[in-house]
Length: 511
Image 1 (cartoon, helix red, strand yellow):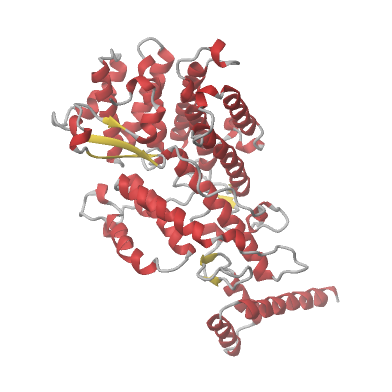
Image 2 (cartoon, helix red, strand yellow):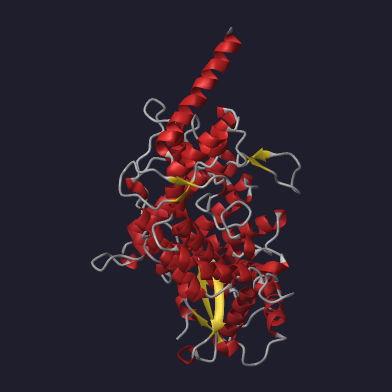
C-alpha cells in the first residue's frame, strides 16, 4: 500500500508540473508538450525533458513582474556564463575557444596565437543581428567576448564589450522579475526560475566586480535585491547529488570524485564582492568625498573586513586546505584587492598610518600572491590561465624598486617573471609585460641581480631594438594586453597604463 501511495503522489506531482508548465510556457512550447504526450510518451519524461532547461537564456519581455520567461532547453545553471566566476578556466565561465587547439577556430593555420579568432570574428558578425532586444543570452555572450578579447585580442575591443555587457544586463532589470521558491504558492517551474534568477543576478554581480576592480572603477552593476536562493541547502539544485556540478573530478591529483563546493565557493565570492564594492568606493571617492590617503581609518576598517572574510571561510576553503582551482584563485583575488587598497599609502610610515606599515604589508601581500600562484602551479599548470598574467604583473612591479636591497622581494620578483615566462607560451602579451619590466629597469638604471636578469634577458634576446619603444601595455580584466604604441605614447620605453600602472609604485609610473 505504501508503494502504491508513493507512486500516486509522484504522478500527482508530475501532473501539477505539467499544469504549471502549460500555464506559463509559450504557446509553441505547450503545443510541443501536447504533441509528445499524444505520441505516447509518459507525462514524467516529457515534463522532465522540458524542465531540465530551467535557466533563462532569453528575456525579451520583462515589463510585467510575472511575465512568461523564454526557456532554452538544455541550459541549466551549471553551464551558464553567470556561474562561479573567479577568472579561472577550470571552474568558471571562461570562453573555451581561448584555450582550444581545434585548428578550425584558428584564424591562421598552425598559428596558436590566433586560436579562437575565427570563432570570435563570427560572433562579432552575428552580434548586431542578435542584439536587437533585451536578451540574457546576448549579455552572457558579450561578457564571454570581453574575456576572450582581454586574453587574446584587443584591449580597446575588450573595454567596448565590457561596457556593452553592463548596459545589456542592466536593461534586463532582473530585480523586477519576481519568482518564489515557496512550494505553497509556486509551481515547480516558478521555483526553478527563482533559483535561476538568483544565480544569474549574483553571478553577474560577481563577474562584473572582477572587471571593475581590474579597471579601478566603481561598480555599475550593484548588489542584487534578491535573496541567495541557490544557497538554500534544502531546495537549491546545487545541493543535489545528481547535479553535474555537485562533483569535481580532480584528476591527476586524485581519481576519486570529490564535492565541488560550488555553492560554498560562490557564497564566499558574493561576500567578497560586497566588500570589494566598498573598497572601490573608498579608492574612487565621489567629487565631494574624502581622498583615500586622508581616510586611513576607513582603509584599516576595510583591511580588517577582508582579513575577517579570509579567516572565516569554511574549513575546506581556507588557504591552507585549498586544492580546488576556484578556491585557490579566491585567495589570490583577495590578496590583489588588499594590494590595490594599500597603494594610496605608499610613503607613509607605521607611525603615520597606524597599526602597521602599509608599504611593508603591501610587499607581504605581494609575496602571498606569488605563494598562491606557486601553489596553483604545483598542482596544475599556469600555461592556460590568462588571469594569472595580471596577478604576476602586479607582483613584479610592486616589488621592483626594492629587489636590490631585500632578498624576499627579489624572490617574489623572480617567481613573478618565471610565471610570466611560462604564461608567454600561450599568451604573447605576457612576453610584452616582461619587455615592459625590462624597459623600466633600464629607465631607472636599476641594478638587477643576475638571477632576475636572466628572466628578463631571455625574453628580449630575439627582439629587434625598436620593439621596446613601440609597445604599450594595458591591464584589462585581470589580464594584460599589448598593442603598438601611438606617437603620443612614444617615450623611449614601454608605457604602463590601467591597473598595472595604478598598482605599481608611483616612482615607476610613466612620465
